Amino acid sequence: MEELTASLEKLRVTAGDPTPEPFEKLINQLHELEDSTTVCEELVAGGILPLTVAAIQSSVVEVQGKGAELVAELAKVESCRLGCVTGGLVPILVEKMSSSNTKVALQACRALGNICYEHDGGRVSVMESGGASQLLSLLQRAAGLPNTPDDHQLRLVATGFLLNLLNSYDTVQDQSMEAELVDVLCQYLDKFAEDEDIPTHVLLSLTCMADTEVGRGLVVSRDITPQLVRVLRINESPEVTETCLELVTNLAETECVKTQVAQGGVCEAVVEVVRRHRNNPSSDLSPPIIKTATDLIVLILVGDESMGIVYSNGSGSVYQELLEWLTSDLEDLQIAGALAMGNFARSDAHCIQMVESGIAEKLLKVLSSHNSGEGDIRLQHALLSALRNLSIAKENKPVLVNQGALDVLLPMATAIETFPVVFKLLATLRMIIDGQTEAAVKVGSNSEAVGRLVAWCGTTDHPGVQGESSRLLAWIIKNCGGDSSVITSLVSAGCVAPLVLMLGSEHAVMVNEAALALVLVFGTVVTGNVVEKTKLAEVATFVLKNPYLPPEIMSNVLSMMIALSANETALESVKTDDLRTAVSELTSHNNEQVKNLAGALKEKL
Image (cartoon, rainbow, N blue to C red; front, side, top):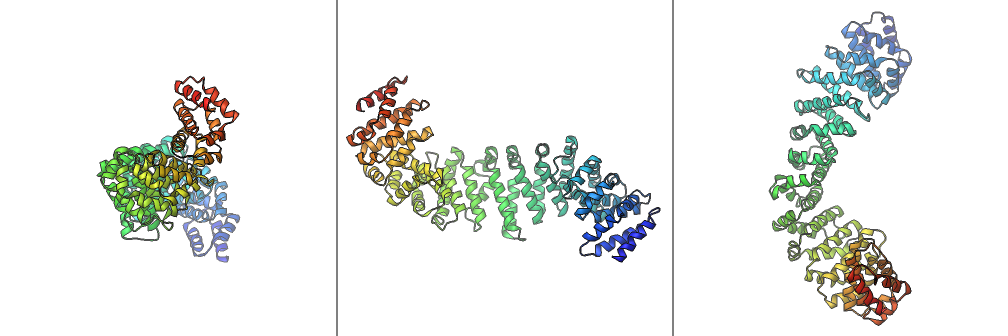
């Protein structure tokens, strides 16, 4: 500490005509300390900042550089940054950024970057002193300098300063300046894409800009896709790769960017990144890089236009690579492959083509190894999502049945406990049995699966599972071809009560499905005792009083009640004054069919 005190005293003595040596000695002493925090705080308290101001304003270039360098060292300490601002250093340092001497410009830039680091007061002061404009000019000038160590260091420090300035700060306050800044940053990515630190600073700065509305608009409108592709392809630094992937992910949340990157070759570059880190893991960052990369591919495929570009009529190179991921031994690749197939299967044309080319069979084969309670939940969910989408096209349903889909799916109905997976499973089964009598009979004849369905109809933990279970029961009844043994077993398993509750749904389509299923149940099975145990009278009254229910659905509900009336016990259990009133009011309905059916039911009540 004595040496430091002596150095400070030497600076005071030479303050009128400063020389670089005392500054350099003090800087070296600070470098030798393991933790310079306390010393820097004491130096600032001891009045060193006015001495640095005098040095930076000296006519001697070497002194200017050393004065700025000392400020840079002091500003590494958080508690010293405010003093640098209040001491009037920022405007002086901003002016020195335009120095023709690279070392002076570098140290001024470094000092300002440290003053701004996690310090909003420093950022505000830089902005108010015209620092953004000066920094932009410096970045433009530095881009054209030769690749000497000093010039490289200047570019590195300038881009680091920019990052500290933009981080958590809303805007550089001048849209035209921001547009120029995006152009300059693209120039840096073009020229220095192979560097390790400069691309990191530039990519993070673009990320900061993209976090503001104005900045995001400028970055998106500039379309930086070529630069991003270049970095992903030629920079092998895991840190740079991860930063670049995170920026693309951020930008791809905007719909038009999904199309930009799909057209610009980002997906191909990302696939190369995955291949590189899968085959030759370079660091602990390889697994997270693969995860980020695969998530990005899936995000891009969420866009309809971008998905079509990547699919390219089933011949796209990225599409073919994603198919290979389905059989990868890396879990993240398998999941991404399955999620991607689900995204590609969002149009009937794609669905039909994909099933014809054997995609469903591949998905089923993978799922068959994960269809137990021990299977990977994320992979199960992704595979079921894809199969559900593929099974929507009517041409695909019999193909999936013939490929053994039910043999893979039905065991899951009794083995899976995770509700999000159950939800996808139920939706997939419902799609597959639509119009497929044998498949509906097979599902409806599986007593264990039906038992789980009925139980899930009563769950309150996941409304989606509750609704899908009821709908699947209704669709089994609708599609089983009137098979009395199936309907009887469903009734015995307790399906009537859930269907009655479904009848009271707020969704008209579910009301209709429940009504049609109950028509078939009441027309096939004697259900007097079963109906007595439900709240059919209350639910039917509620539905028939709904003035917004479409006439065709109202007709189906009335037809259900008429089918019920064939069983005297069942009919007696629903005869209430409220129901009679509701039916009576419908006899004057303006729809002829509703009016006639209401009249017929009124007589029976």
